Image 1 (cartoon, rainbow, N blue to C red):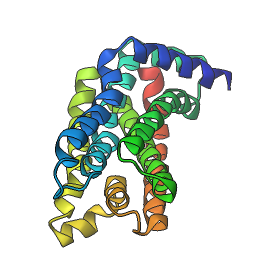
Image 2: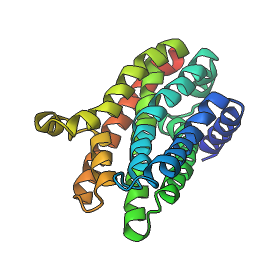
Image 3: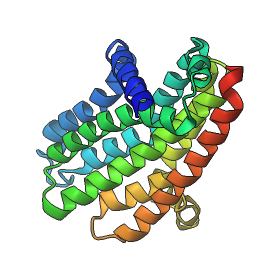
Image 4: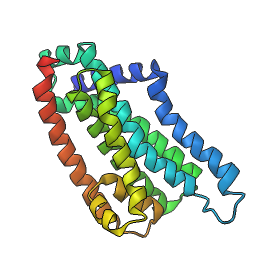
Amino acid sequence: MRNIKAIFTKQAKDMFSNPMVLMNFILFPVVALIMTRLVAIPNYDIPNDMFVTMMAAVFAGMGLVTATAGIIAEDIENKSLRLLVMAGVKPQQYLLGIGGFLLLASAITAVAFGLIGRFTGEDLMKFLVVMISSTAASIILGATIGMMAKNQQAANSLAMPAAVILGFAPMIANFNETFERVASVLYTQQLNVIVNDFSANFGKAMLVIGVNIAVLTVLFILAYRKKGLKA
């Protein structure tokens, strides 16, 4: 527990000293707010929550992957990861420390999206659960990519294609039924389904997201054990 708390605190300090990472948690809800107020609400043909659901999905599926990959790669470049491994920090402790803070920040952002979208009651709870679960998956994926990269530049190069696929797959799925069936295994597609229709099968969506999280966690642990002392 002490190791997790120390890494959590370290990540909090690092984030507030890095405006580029911090902007990921601020920019998307701000854009959603501006577009909702200036475009959606005055236009009766546009649903009031359209830009909220759009920006929320992009934030959860794209922004966090690249941000987390860069954070992990920075630890590798600075030799922080090697020191942590030598100090006996286990992969799950490292992931909970780094990811825990990012997940807390993501939860705050998810609440902001919910308020902008004026979601209430059961719809708000579904939105928050699916958003936070999807951000957890993106954080773990980003951490895994960062762990496999040699440096921050390489991490960004690896993370961007993954983020683009996760971000745009649900959009393509809206226009192609065959692609929709393929994309249904992705957590971003399940997020897209729920945030656009709260009456959709919530249990199925959470099951798919849970499987994604489990698989990505195993991959991260393997990458951590392989890369740790070599970092």
